[in-house]
Amino acid sequence: MSSPSTRRLLKESSDLHKNPSPYFTAAPINDTNLHDWHFTLAGPPSPSPYAQGLYHGRITFPATYPLRPPSFRFLTPSGRFEVNREICLSISGHHEETWQPAWGVRTALLGIRSEIFSSESQGQVGGMEGSEELRREYARLSLGWTCRECGAGNLEAMRELWKVCRERGVEVEGEVAAVDGCSGVEGQRETVEAEAEADADTGALAPASSGDSITVGNEHQARGDDAIESTRAAEPVPAPSASTSVPAAQTQAQVQAQAPLPAVQAPAAAAMHTQTSSSQLASTESPSESIWLDRAIIGVIVALILLILRRVANVDDL
Image 1 (cartoon, rainbow, N blue to C red):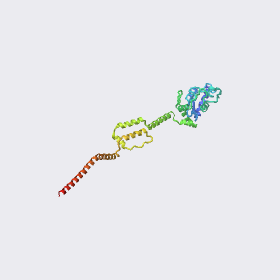
Image 2: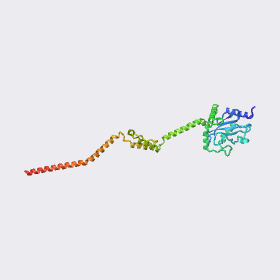
Image 3: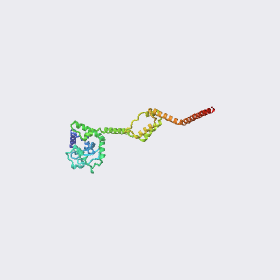
Image 4: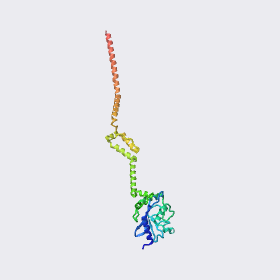
């Protein structure tokens, strides 16, 4: 015949199975030892730093339960309780004088969730004073935490519980629904990968360093391909956008300055060159032309003088 403690534990286990709570799941580790249970508890709602956290722990029942209280310890790091150490609660074995046999697992876990997580340890046995940032980080990491003893994962165990709750008409809302809507460890991994890809895309649009610009400029100078450079020079150059880096724009300006003139401007440049050459030639030949002109004028004058003298001589002979 089973003991009163065993019958009480069987009754509580059956009640939790028939009337599940969306805030916690608790059951014996195996059927051969009903005095050793594991539980997974959802953290209290915002603005608590434990919001959306899931915490796994262990309940040890004495042989005289429910006349004597059980002991509780948390296995998931939380920043509020030390890991795998019995904690001092008014409903635990540390305070048997305040324990009521009418209380049970449901009462104890709901009390821990609503009261203990919302207060500070203040020297409590098994308690600790962690910073709010640390507690929020532990709450985030708790979604992917798995118990080494029973092999249960926090998120998997609670999702299974929430599925049962919905099938039986128990509402899952608030912070608990938000946790159920997340994608767990896989979702966190996908989020990290997406952020890494976004960072990579941002890095691709980031301004190039001066060393990169110098390298590009050297490649253009060392290439020495007039045909390629002429083609590039003939193509219209788009206006630089806001994302164009300053070093890249300077390099492009250097390349354009070094490239030959476009084909459209070549005839005009040739005409200008011809005019310049003609003017230079004219300026070079003008002194000699002026000398020949002077000699011609002198020759004409000498011829006129001779003609006049001949006329005068002929008149004297008459």
